[in-house]
Image (cartoon, rainbow, N blue to C red; front, side, top):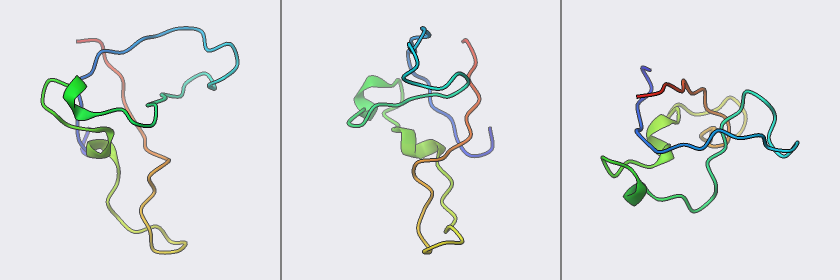
Length: 68
C-alpha cells in the first residue's frame, strides 16, 4: 500500500486465542535479513507524530496481506 511494502514468508495458523483473528503479529527481534530486500517491519509504519505525546505509532499499523 502507500505506506510501504515488505515481502516475507508468512505462516497462517490458528493462534489458539493468542492473537485476535484478522491481526498480523511480527515477533520482537524479527530482522530484515529474513526478507528479500533487507527491510524490517518499520518499512510499514506511519512516520507521522501521534496526537498524544508526539511520538510514532509503532504498535499499530494497517497492513494488507497478499499471497505472491
